[in-house]
Amino acid sequence: MRQITIREFDFEEFGRAYPVLSQLRPELPLQQYLTIAAQMRERGYRVICLLVDEKIVSYCGFSFTTDLMRGKYLWIYDLVTDEQNRGKGYGGKLLEHIEGIAKDGGASCVALSVFRELAHKFYKKSDYQVKSQLYQKNLLD
Image 1 (cartoon, rainbow, N blue to C red):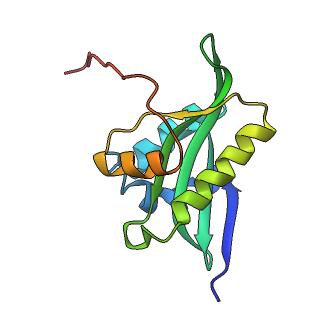
Image 2 (tube, rainbow, N blue to C red):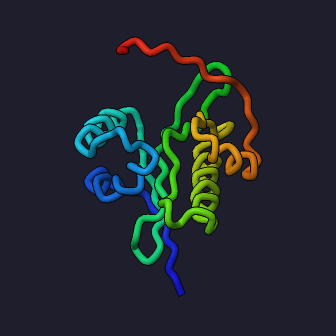
Protein backbone atom coordinates (compact mmCIF):
# COMPACT_ATOMS: atom_id res chain seq x y z
CA MET A 1 0.00 0.00 0.00
CA ARG A 2 1.26 3.46 -0.91
CA GLN A 3 2.12 5.87 1.89
CA ILE A 4 0.76 9.39 1.26
CA THR A 5 2.29 12.24 3.26
CA ILE A 6 1.60 15.96 3.10
CA ARG A 7 4.17 18.21 4.74
CA GLU A 8 5.77 21.62 4.64
CA PHE A 9 9.24 21.85 3.16
CA ASP A 10 12.09 23.82 4.70
CA PHE A 11 13.82 26.24 2.34
CA GLU A 12 16.77 23.85 2.07
CA GLU A 13 14.38 21.29 0.50
CA PHE A 14 12.91 23.61 -2.15
CA GLY A 15 15.40 22.37 -4.75
CA ARG A 16 14.16 18.82 -4.23
CA ALA A 17 10.64 19.98 -5.18
CA TYR A 18 11.80 21.84 -8.30
CA PRO A 19 11.28 18.95 -10.80
CA VAL A 20 7.53 18.98 -10.08
CA LEU A 21 7.26 22.79 -9.98
CA SER A 22 9.17 23.03 -13.27
CA GLN A 23 6.29 21.23 -15.00
CA LEU A 24 4.19 24.32 -14.28
CA ARG A 25 7.01 26.85 -14.71
CA PRO A 26 9.32 25.34 -17.38
CA GLU A 27 10.74 28.77 -18.23
CA LEU A 28 12.10 29.18 -14.68
CA PRO A 29 15.62 27.75 -14.17
CA LEU A 30 16.42 26.13 -10.83
CA GLN A 31 18.79 28.86 -9.60
CA GLN A 32 16.34 31.61 -10.50
CA TYR A 33 13.57 29.71 -8.71
CA LEU A 34 15.68 29.40 -5.56
CA THR A 35 16.62 33.09 -5.65
CA ILE A 36 13.04 34.27 -6.14
CA ALA A 37 11.67 31.78 -3.58
CA ALA A 38 14.17 33.07 -1.01
CA GLN A 39 12.94 36.63 -1.60
CA MET A 40 9.30 35.52 -1.41
CA ARG A 41 10.03 33.56 1.77
CA GLU A 42 10.87 36.84 3.48
CA ARG A 43 7.23 37.79 2.81
CA GLY A 44 5.82 34.50 4.12
CA TYR A 45 6.06 32.19 1.10
CA ARG A 46 5.70 28.54 2.09
CA VAL A 47 5.87 25.26 0.18
CA ILE A 48 3.82 22.18 1.02
CA CYS A 49 4.15 18.97 -0.97
CA LEU A 50 2.21 15.74 -1.21
CA LEU A 51 4.52 12.75 -1.31
CA VAL A 52 3.73 9.18 -2.29
CA ASP A 53 6.24 6.73 -0.86
CA GLU A 54 8.54 9.74 -0.20
CA LYS A 55 8.42 10.83 -3.88
CA ILE A 56 7.12 14.37 -4.44
CA VAL A 57 3.94 14.16 -6.48
CA SER A 58 2.20 17.54 -5.87
CA TYR A 59 3.59 20.98 -5.01
CA CYS A 60 1.89 24.06 -3.59
CA GLY A 61 3.54 27.43 -2.97
CA PHE A 62 1.44 29.95 -1.04
CA SER A 63 1.38 32.74 1.52
CA PHE A 64 -1.10 34.55 3.70
CA THR A 65 -1.80 38.11 2.64
CA THR A 66 -4.29 40.88 3.36
CA ASP A 67 -6.14 43.36 1.21
CA LEU A 68 -9.15 45.64 1.50
CA MET A 69 -11.42 43.40 -0.57
CA ARG A 70 -10.90 40.05 1.19
CA GLY A 71 -9.25 40.89 4.52
CA LYS A 72 -6.79 38.13 5.44
CA TYR A 73 -6.64 35.31 2.88
CA LEU A 74 -4.37 32.59 1.55
CA TRP A 75 -2.94 33.19 -1.93
CA ILE A 76 -1.80 30.18 -3.96
CA TYR A 77 1.07 31.06 -6.29
CA ASP A 78 1.65 27.57 -7.67
CA LEU A 79 -0.23 24.28 -7.42
CA VAL A 80 0.89 21.44 -9.66
CA THR A 81 0.81 17.66 -9.72
CA ASP A 82 3.46 15.62 -11.50
CA GLU A 83 2.25 14.90 -15.02
CA GLN A 84 2.44 11.10 -14.59
CA ASN A 85 0.30 11.30 -11.44
CA ARG A 86 -2.50 13.60 -12.57
CA GLY A 87 -6.06 12.34 -12.31
CA LYS A 88 -5.36 10.29 -9.17
CA GLY A 89 -6.77 12.82 -6.69
CA TYR A 90 -3.42 14.01 -5.31
CA GLY A 91 -3.96 17.65 -6.31
CA GLY A 92 -7.37 17.62 -4.65
CA LYS A 93 -5.93 16.16 -1.45
CA LEU A 94 -3.23 18.83 -1.36
CA LEU A 95 -5.77 21.59 -2.08
CA GLU A 96 -7.98 20.35 0.79
CA HIS A 97 -4.94 20.42 3.08
CA ILE A 98 -4.15 24.00 2.02
CA GLU A 99 -7.78 25.00 2.68
CA GLY A 100 -7.40 23.59 6.21
CA ILE A 101 -4.27 25.70 6.73
CA ALA A 102 -6.22 28.75 5.52
CA LYS A 103 -9.07 28.07 7.97
CA ASP A 104 -6.69 27.44 10.85
CA GLY A 105 -4.88 30.69 9.99
CA GLY A 106 -8.09 32.74 10.10
CA ALA A 107 -8.25 33.37 6.35
CA SER A 108 -11.52 34.50 4.77
CA CYS A 109 -10.81 32.53 1.58
CA VAL A 110 -8.26 30.87 -0.68
CA ALA A 111 -7.52 32.70 -3.93
CA LEU A 112 -5.35 32.15 -7.01
CA SER A 113 -4.98 33.07 -10.68
CA VAL A 114 -5.38 30.29 -13.23
CA PHE A 115 -3.74 30.60 -16.64
CA ARG A 116 -3.75 27.03 -17.93
CA GLU A 117 -7.04 25.99 -19.52
CA LEU A 118 -6.81 22.43 -18.17
CA ALA A 119 -6.61 23.76 -14.61
CA HIS A 120 -9.95 25.58 -14.90
CA LYS A 121 -11.87 22.31 -14.77
CA PHE A 122 -9.93 21.15 -11.67
CA TYR A 123 -10.75 24.30 -9.68
CA LYS A 124 -14.40 24.43 -10.77
CA LYS A 125 -14.75 20.81 -9.64
CA SER A 126 -13.25 21.87 -6.29
CA ASP A 127 -15.99 24.54 -5.86
CA TYR A 128 -13.83 27.54 -6.77
CA GLN A 129 -15.67 30.36 -8.55
CA VAL A 130 -14.33 32.95 -10.96
CA LYS A 131 -14.42 36.23 -9.05
CA SER A 132 -12.45 38.58 -11.30
CA GLN A 133 -10.33 38.89 -14.39
CA LEU A 134 -6.62 39.54 -14.19
CA TYR A 135 -5.23 42.33 -16.32
CA GLN A 136 -1.52 42.64 -16.84
CA LYS A 137 0.71 45.03 -18.71
CA ASN A 138 4.25 43.77 -19.28
CA LEU A 139 6.87 46.44 -18.71
CA LEU A 140 10.02 44.50 -19.58
CA ASP A 141 9.21 43.53 -23.17
